[in-house]
Length: 220
Image (tube, rainbow, N blue to C red; front, side, top):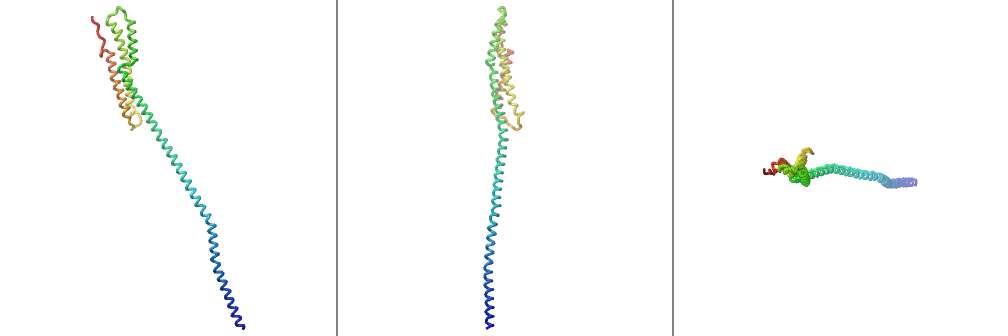
């Protein structure tokens, strides 16, 4: 009896140890899993926070880069607009001067209304100053010769003005920005004014000196 009792006690102890081992072995993985899940839950938000911060910083950097690019484009546009405006204003001035030169050249061929008035005034002065006893040649000179010379003088002044203005327009590119060409139409009009000025000046000199259409001589 004593031997059986001891064997039963030994088996019970062994069974109790096995059950304890089973309980311990089964409980350990659950504890490990719970620990891992808790650690993951605790670590998850911390890891997500730096990612959101990095995205925000990247977006801010992109916005800053876009702003810098826009500012650079605006400054470049302003720098490009200034020379363009200057070039346009210079071209307008040269074109206007060329047109003025051509107009003065046309007036220089006839003397204009100023020459007409000057001729008429000289005629009146000749009538007032000429005596009845003066010779025919003197009367012709006082009434007509002086009047024509006055008209030729005014026409010559207009012709010289056209010549000078046209010449200045033609030589203006030589004193401007290097490599900048003058508009063809400006050059053509300036040349027209210059040529008309030369022709008008030659005609005025010829008429003033009686080389062209001189005063007729009185019969003796």
